[in-house]
Image (cartoon, rainbow over all chains, first blue to last red):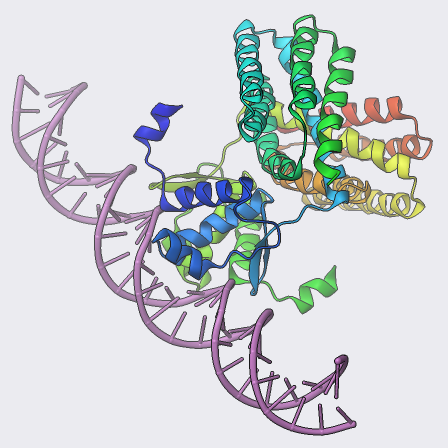
Length: 216
Length: 216
DNA sequence: CATATTCTTATTGTATACAAAAAACTATCT
DNA sequence: AGATAGTTTTTTGTATACAATAAGAATATG
């Protein structure tokens, strides 16, 4: 993974995309804020061409809204859309988890346990943002290893908006700890190939995330 | 829908995108064929800028593969990926159909019946390509009216590759007629809110499509 | 003959310039 | 004050030019 970044130096477009994405997901760029090509290209020291491509990609990920011929702004996810995202998310993740459990690859479970552990540790240190980032990696890991790359690609895109929704989340470490601990239950259910259990745990887990994300 | 196209004249990027998409889905541009910016921009009489944006979008839809810094070509969907697409497709469509049946909007069923009817008629006249196009509209209509636009957006993207897979399909009108007739069964199941039936009909329907698409 | 190696060409990545459209502002009028 | 019309400014859409890189061809080498 690190190797890849070393050998294939990214295009300016991608670098700028990553940078702006981080700005949005960190809250530095807030919902509704404009994302003008000119000023941002100046800020990054690149021309409008790669910046424009970066904006297009951000819009694909649902992080900005481009109003044609006018301007682009960071999206504000409505209550309704948050509900829709959670609905699709449950569906896709349940499928991923079931597929992964059918494969039954021990390596995958090991990876999941490690991520889950790091998630707990980050929460202990009070770094909520990083803990959530790690939580996303947990869910992405399931999709990545489930044996369906088309599914992964779809979910990876959806994940951007899932992370965006969490920005408003005001959760005390105790509740978050509770949330993270559900990961272990899910892993066990997958290992035992109990598909009904997988579905109920994951649904509850995601709904927990959803209710905290959209409350504020 | 027609209104929209009239009032918002599309950007060159989008026009070019639509044009190339049609070229690919009609078979005019075949899998593996290169899609160079220079020659195509010349062909359409536009500059490389909008053409480049069109290619980027086509790549988002999974219709071309862009090899960074080198060239782009029309994708060839592997057997493995075709399987993955079918797997995700079943999952998303079953969810859409269930959601639609829970809403129970009569208008939606009316629309589905009309599309299905036109689908049959097109097959009668021997216009297989148009019949398939109409079949895509049938499935897209379910997703559009299911009450989850996030789900629709995802499925709409997947549909491009579903259509691409059908290019190799060699199906006699009788088998196709059989396939299209399953639409009515699905509509009934949705109207009666029999979710298990919805799932089994749709799964069989899509697998039918899948097997015929990936056989050649 | 197969395999490196160099050279040429094709193709993309990025910067820049200009035109067109929309947004923001200002002055005016009711 | 609020709406309206006209003007200015901002911002995007597109064309074009140049640089950098990869592909393909020609040439050398074992």
